[in-house]
Image 1 (cartoon, rainbow, N blue to C red):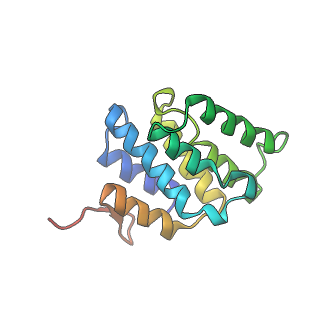
Image 2: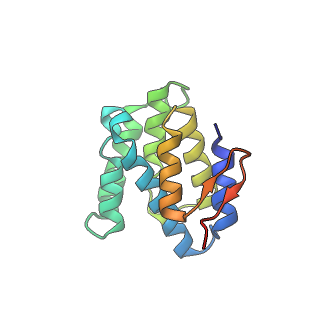
Length: 149
């Protein structure tokens, strides 16, 4: 089993998280990952990936994104620092509900992955998205493996 840092280091070594096009790919990675675990999210967080995807494709507005984000923060109000799996999973979902240009993608991706693992979401599903979006895998020693050319 790998950890959040292994995944972050792999992505950061592959992508320039200061480049706007790479920031968009990192945002897509987080949205795609959430789609894979929608059924594992608390009920109130299950629409987050869809709202974020609609925003990224121009269908939803920044206002729609903000409404969903505020709704999710309100759902964990007073428990937001809890280590409860449902709170951590909700916080994972909140990460996709910011417009990419408003983010420091280094911090956002690192905390997204931290909440992912802390909330016990599926590493195999995260790995599948990593392979799909970045063409990368992590071997048993934690080292990045690029696809064969």
